[in-house]
Length: 289
Ligand code: AMP
Image (cartoon, rainbow, N blue to C red):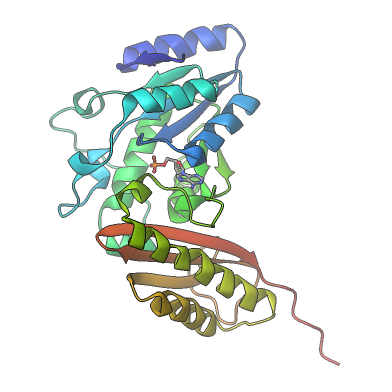
């Protein structure tokens, strides 16, 4: 079993001991309710570092007023088992009071990549995410930190914050882990009823359709987005929040499409919000005769 600690002082002491033993340190930040997607991140860290810390913290500052962090699933016992199987060394599961003092008033705000996609629909969300990640980097001081491409905009924002603020940590991206039928693993999938679960498969189908079009030479982001929407609408039970086809680095629209493009989708299945994406390298334009 990985050791479980609740305080910053304990984390610092354990990490200092690991460093004194000559080990590099990897951090996997999570909100718990762990699944095979998280597990892949932990395994990557364990493979690449002598000492791996997994944090479990449902960060209240990244939830909007209409979203309820108390409703987020919690299952510490099962999480500890998964972490033990993945062979991490330390679990840091602090209470809110250990992380935020009552009159906390300092924030990390990335101002460009946060504007669109989920950022436009969840005001303040990425400020909360960037702030908690910066705090975790300062508490743990890892050499490397691991983030999933599932939350693509989050990954890009954290990379940007680390670059812009010279935070001494290397961000490693881990590809999306999916169920056999294509649904991206998410802690929120457990909220889906059987009908919604079936409907959610349209997300992967829609992204695959968009990818196929780009690979076949479609350069119009609008046409790609329309085809993705069509596939989602055909399902009938999903409510689209957004379908965006944007540059994979700037997260801004490019027309015609070129280079690496991300197709990003957010939908509601009932009251459960699901996000997914695919990164597609546009084929080189054919030289004219
Ligand atoms: P969360 O606990 O949902 O905040 O996620 C913690 C980390 O796990 C984030 O870096 C996520 O991007 C990553 N993650 C969540 N689901 C998946 C997945 N299906 N595949 C890969 N990484 C994931």
